[in-house]
Amino acid sequence: MNKDHQVPSEFVQLDAIPVDSCGSCGSAERLGFQFDYAYQPIVDVVTRSTYAHEALVRGPAGEGALSVLSQVTEQNRYRFDQACRVKAIKTAAQLGMKERLSINFLPNAV
Image 1 (cartoon, rainbow, N blue to C red):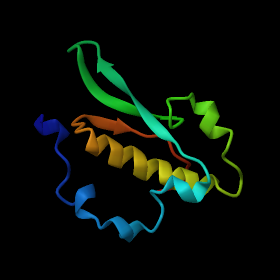
Image 2 (cartoon, rainbow, N blue to C red):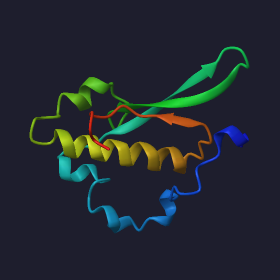
Image 3 (spheres, helix red, strand yellow):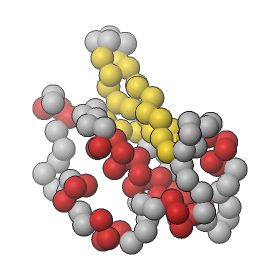
């Protein structure tokens, strides 16, 4: 890993956080629907290397974002946004991504 991409020492690795410490924020079941992610590489054209990945919400079988976003309501919007952040980070970690991760989320969510 490039030293410019080191994780700050005050950050806690996801695998160091107990699964139940976040309640069900990482569980799509409480939403009443499942979702997954595709990770789009963001490429540095000068070095021709992957700089980061953007987490793009997808259906559980690879369906487009609209199939998931059409199920988001006023009542589940915040819970969905929270579950998205958790799942995007956990999945990227499970995939062993070393690059930065770009995640879209609601303003004032974090």
